[in-house]
Length: 493
Image (cartoon, rainbow, N blue to C red; front, side, top):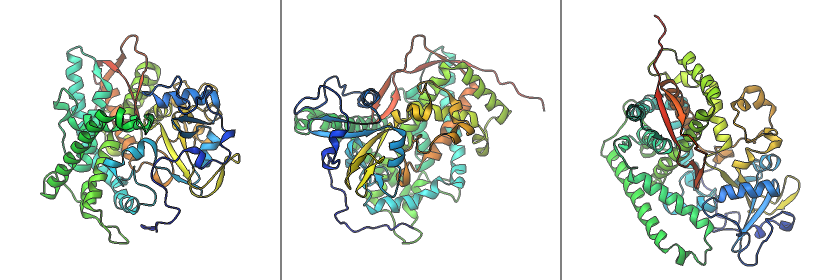
């Protein structure tokens, strides 16, 4: 069992942004965009609304390790498979909490996603909550996932009957928010009864967008340029905190408690002590963990579902193959059992391929825990960090072949997976700090895709071209699909 506490020594990371020149002794060897200007850096041609896609474009030009600088802050980016595999070495590197992730700390604090490595609550919460994502717990969540999916399909039935297209990202956000809220915390936001997004979603999008804006605004100008945004962000954070406090208070009062002995994530937070030390999560940390799960537990999954539905609608051959698998594996059952979801192996490949092309968490940062050399080429001091650009790592021809932009679920056939180097597919991060809820997200997404393919024909709107909006996470913009209700063909008894 890992130690829960660690003394604050000189190995404790410094707070605040650490520019690359502080940790990369041979930084000059790493290429940067042309036309770098004094004081302002590499800002010519940059789009503050699409920093990830800008970095993808620049990375293709400069190679697998490159750097960008803006207003004195310099970042090293990595996307080459060989270098990313080196950064996955847990004996030399660990998660780095920086950039937009650090900007979320005012609301998420030392929650699982935003905690610094030296903060003891990360290990405590991980050990307490990890059983909440084990097989028995997941099987317990499955009926609630089915119920929320039923609400989505009722809404889509009404749209289809009216001849109206569906708003895919909006409806996937409703679905995934209700799923994590109900399975994890016994709370119903009533998303499908609302025409507009729930205020929790609006506040969440506001905090994520503000965190991203903080990355691209010069610190010296932030008080001037972000004055109004700061006020809105404070109001958004207050709403998130107030909503979560009400959910927790209701549970303490006995409301929303799940049936059965298994309990849910909130039960574990409130009632379960660490098995070795007896420590419990503090009320403040419980609030931070609930916010973390409600935000991270639905935002990335809604994006993954949206991208998958886009690709399915635009690749009818893939859709037909996936639908055939669903009908063969699930048969006539109206509600598939928990065990039947994992048997949709081809549909899972579809989901993985969508996550390859557009990982909804498009980057993760790693810092050196010792003085080392990246890929045998670039020396790094302890504390130096790099941003792994997952969305470009997933397109590295060295790992994915000559046409990495093509949508091809067979990349995830067992033989193809075995033939690839490790650490080239990282939609959930890497190492000890990888997403704790990845199996939850994959089960939910596979289940929902199976249900939708069995029920509807999917038709893209004519002329739609994929556009990606960035708010720390990635999401298709303006994605709408037209539906055709399919008749169920049942086999004879």
